[in-house]
View (cartoon, protein in one colour):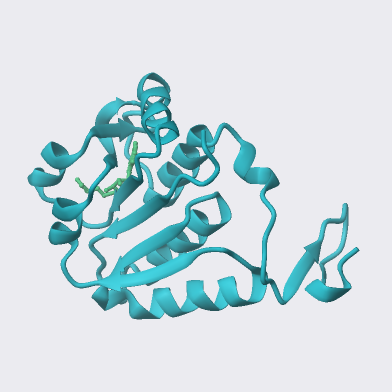
Length: 182
Ligand code: SAM
């Protein structure tokens, strides 16, 4: 897969209060596991601020946006759409074809729901992708999908414009100024 391929994650729907933590973690997971951008609904501005703050401290590139019209965003998307849903086709059967389209430079939109998503989304999606056909979580589904999409290469990515860097250790919690990093 072309490393410059743009992968956007769309958080479809957000219930303020109830979904705050999960929506934030959708954004943090998108950033950590190789997506280029997350788009939140307008009513999730607190989650957007948290993910921006993490990006400022720990690096990017990663963009965070809020949009009011999630349906319009999907309708106007010019590229492939992978909608993650327990009702979809098994990820192991379809992720290769999603990757092949991306190799050709097609931007990819990955959609994860919160509350029930509208039926139109199932029809607008290029592919409805199931990470098992069991109910679980948008965070887990997104993590497994991105890891399969990038075939694990996202784990070795380099971060730029970071203020801080974690020093990997067997034991301990060491964070240093990025400028002091070896
Ligand atoms: N009850 C909601 C519905 O019927 O649409 C689903 C809520 S679920 C907690 C929230 C999101 O998690 C879903 O919209 C989907 O994106 C993701 N999700 C849950 N289980 C999944 C699975 N097995 N595979 C892929 N995504 C999944």
